[in-house]
Image 1 (cartoon, rainbow, N blue to C red):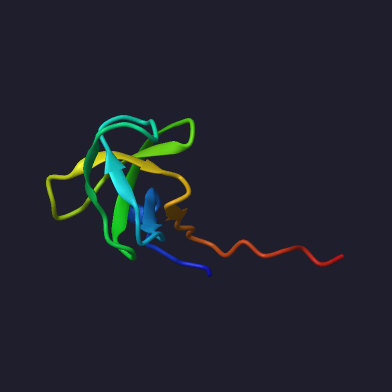
Image 2 (image 1 turned 60 degrees about the vertical axis):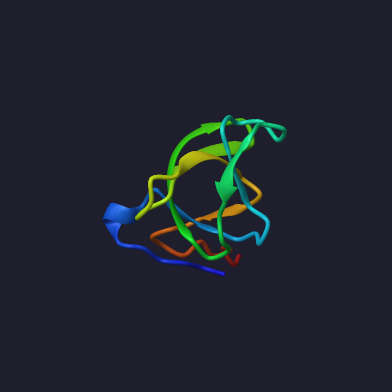
Length: 83
């Protein structure tokens, strides 16, 4: 799947997991802050290990989300090079 965004939205991602959990800190056993629905767009911030700090546009929610639960959005397609 390839997703495109405008330049101002280059640091965004899309939640790909139905069971994505926003956490208080960047650890799998950290306290949950809330659940995020699949397909939701998030603003990506710092990365710590396997987690991104994210803000949920249109809400006051922010916290850490596993990188396995979010897909980065690219401005340009990344295609294999044919030799």
